Every structure is written in structure tokens, then in C-alpha cells.
Amino acid sequence: MKDENCIFCKIANGEIPSNTIYEDDLFRVILDNGPATRGHALILPKQHYADLYEIDEDTAAAAMKLARKMALIMRDKLNCDGLNVVQNNGSSAGQTVRHFHVHLIPRYENDGQHILWKPTSPSADELKAVRDELNR
Ligand code: AMP
Ligand code: ZN
Image: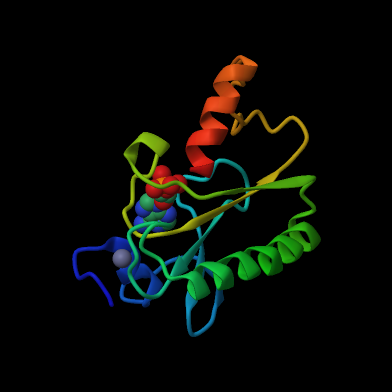
């Protein structure tokens, strides 16, 4: 399924040009046009899924497999020191384009980016309550 109002559907299917670095039957990988770091790329499925809740299991698995393949290529060619794999779902999580995508963000020592969160300090009881809620 494609969504005719979705920009990532158009990019993934080649209707809008992009800086493509990989393509197969299921995915196109493009350079992000507002990169966090040099080489920041996005894995776009060619079918439309809004997010991780909508994508089917097999395509989600294939996306992670492709993330690893791209990670090796990026390390080899960009000589990065590390890589963040980021996948946002919902506006509260920072998703701005409602077409499932995986960010591949090469990291370089002292690149000045802050992609990590601020840890909190829940009590043991609070952690247990969450654990029990999720195990129910
Ligand atoms: P997210 O906030 O997870 O939804 O990520 C959306 C990402 O898509 C952002 O990093 C944008 O810079 C990027 N982006 C939006 N439009 C385009 C475009 N036309 N070409 C390349 N990247 C884009
Ligand atoms: Zn789409």
C-alpha cells in the first residue's frame, strides 16, 4: 500500500529524487536532508506503514537486517567511530514524518550531537510496579 499524500512513499518509490545510497525491492535508503552528522541516512520501506505499530513483522525484521548491512558499509566507507540506530513512533517520540523509517546516524568522536536521554532514578518499587504491569 502507498499513501499518495506521503512524501516518504514518493521518495521510496522514486517519484521524488533523493540521495539514494541503497535500493532493493522492499527498501530505499536515502541521506537525511537535515543530517545530525555526516552520512545520516534513513531506511524507507517502499510500502506505507505509519510506524512500528503498523509495519508487519517480516518487513520490520528485514529493516533491521538492512540496518546492519548499512552499518557495516558506513563504518567501512565513512570511517565513523560508532552508530546510533533510531526509530521514532508518534509525535511524543519525535516522529515528524508518519511513514516508518529507521535513522542510521554515524557517530564521530566529539561530533557535538546528543542523541541519548537523561536517565531518571525510579525507586525499586516503581520499577517493580512497571515490571508487573508489563508482565500482566
Ligand atoms: P522523524 O523525526 O523520525 O520523523 O524523522 C524525519 C527525518 O526525515 C528528519 O531527520 C528529516 O530531516 C528527514 N527528512 C524530512 N524530509 C526529508 C526529505 N525530503 N529528504 C530527506 N530527509 C528528509
Ligand atoms: Zn508513506
